[in-house]
Length: 313
Image (cartoon, rainbow, N blue to C red):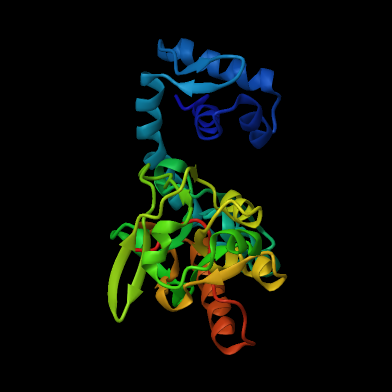
């Protein structure tokens, strides 16, 4: 009855026969044959295939939507068997913002690998909001205010630090803004949010009162790394999480402006569905995150914690 369903889920998750085949340790030809046999048995076409892309059909989308949660339940049941072995094992899949890959995740992932070598840790960096269950992830990392209310949250950082930056060459041409109103005479490298499609309005504060500024600009991107690169190239002002520009500020490629008007945002949290919190691998992850958080609080001073993958609210 279940023959071919793991292959279907792998192709649906990766949107690629080649990647799915690599995950399952078979050839792309064998993976394609498994899907064909499954489609013949079910009497429906599950995937639309072209030379460039693989996409689910309506029937495939319906099957994937139902199988995802069901598979998560099965994985929970199997993972709880780890309690009898005494140590987490299997695979832990995490989703996190792209910029967190360079500063927030290394300590967590490295410690998980060191303390639990039987556990394979897989990380996917994605700035969009991810449905953990549907996408097959065990846990995620996001800003606290972007996490759904029914998720278990484990704080990682108290706040997120933000900055408005520009290259010295841009400031030499356009002048240095001294107050929020000055931004209307400048050019911004604007960010379109992946989850909503909305262009982000900069959030500032003056004398305790919040304000938003829709800074003009003809460049709109949806990737923070590209925003930073464009700012370094002198294309305009960028509003980003501080860690994404810490190195560029330190070596003089970028300068911070309007610092007194830029306020901290919500901190980053680990999150996962409540019904999975008894899994040994998630218990282990929570303990590692708490340990990293304590060291962050009591250890040497460091740059403000940030990531370029979320919007301050």
